[in-house]
Image (tube, rainbow, N blue to C red; front, top):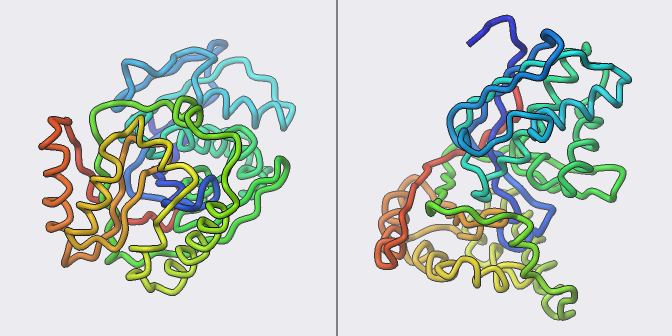
Length: 300
């Protein structure tokens, strides 16, 4: 790779974590490497790895759009820009590929301009672009994030996650568009379901903050989105049940899916994988498994 180009490595993320819809997320050690430099008078984009057959090489490219948002904010007029991406994060998987692209584009554009914007400034702009902060926050800052975006400002708290905690991503070979996954959600919810999720999200946050991971079995339960998204991901609750039976601390739909995520100790890791693999095998669903840890650093 051209050493003259600015470079950032951006982690994947898993969001919602069950009950924390649009506000809870964790960075994972699966990465997109993004390179950028001012060059010539045209936009040039090269893509390799995941999504290389589908990602735009024009002004609709998400890395470019994110970078341009920074340049516009700083009143920098572009003449030409060269972008290269090497992607490990699958598209439409529920592992934060769009958030990684946004953070990568913004961080590099800010560096090219001499880093005039703070990390919090970038997070505000990324949240505006994404619409919520549960993926962009972890991708930028690393760790477990509790984040809320009010349309202007993003407020967050970050917590490091122990390295002996495993995040097992079960990725079936299909894509679920976030727009479609949001389209199945109701406009209104029952009060009792809202109360249920407030309790579970609070318990989940406390579990990660204190390291009381045994509580995740109950803290990852949800009544706001997973129950509706099972029509797009029919295996959803079977995977959760299998993961728990295999010894997982907890399991949930990662973002909008279709990836399912299980949280496990080192001792139970292989048992969880074996138990969940059977669910996909019995349904003839192609499966890729990622054995992941939390990335506690973020974009770097």
